[in-house]
Amino acid sequence: MIRFIFRSHCPSAVLLAIITVALGASAAAQVPADADAYRTEIERWHQKRIESLKNPEGYLSLVGLFPLVEGESRFGSDADNDLVFPAGTPGRAGVFVLEDGDVRVEVADGVIVTAEDAAVTSAVLKSDAIGKPTILAMGSMRFYVIDRSGHLYIRLKDVESELIDHFEGIDRYPVEAQWRIEARFEPYDPPKPIRIPSVLGTESVQDCPGRVVFEVGGEPCSLEPMSASNGRLFFVFGDGTSGLETYGGGRFLYAEPPSDAGAVVLDFNKAYNPPCAFSPFATCPLPHGANRLTVRITAGEKNWGEGH
Image 1 (cartoon, rainbow, N blue to C red):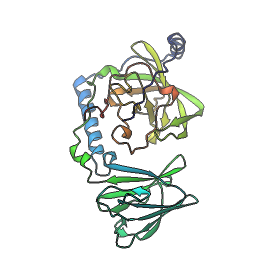
Image 2 (cartoon, one colour):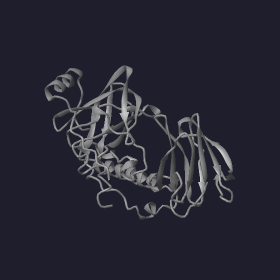
Image 3 (tube, rainbow, N blue to C red):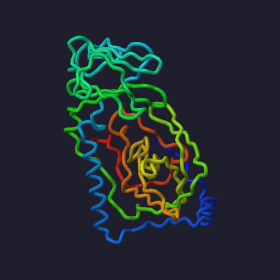
């Protein structure tokens, strides 16, 4: 299992304390009035998270990730294929052809492959870069083209993966209201482009709408989000637990849009593992430099990979 250990950020306490006071940032945890109702809400959120992971076509079903190269790539379970699919699939299933950025599949005679329940013998495949990709089905396998920073891959899933059946959940820190922190949003005008690394060794450039400033145990901290749907903020962050109790590649967290007064609630009880914590075939973003905290965020999901 790959480990990533972070050792940076949370700038000088003196400097950020001055900034925090000047901007009136609140570092206090917004303790819910009804603690029992709050814990119930977190448990419901976590249960939905588990159900999503166990979806037959969720991330627990990942069984392969294959880079495509210009020209032909044969696929199937035979060991001499360019893309070796799991045992149980046809030995010679067909060929993918990459030409000038377009991917075509040619299915071998006698092999049954479908797309939206219609048999496919030859088809140009849409990638996920332009919306919903063309999803091909072959037995329990589902496969399609994904685009990561201009690099094309075949993503392979098995909707009957044993991992789905054997998945028993994720260890977590105890739910504590102190980790529901109100931060202050400082907008960037215009949005700041940030370079987001990935486990594939690639980088993408995303617009960052601003940063949030807050405190953990009296230590000033800040995080830079990416924009998500409906104005929400999406954070990829590492902290002092990364590579120890929590996944080394960091964790994910969503927050609702900032209030008119610039307040953002960071509920670290909802910090969760990226797909790469469960599968070597995922293509996760990693925290960029500004989001590598040294403080310990002892809330949310722990590292699933240690003794699942």
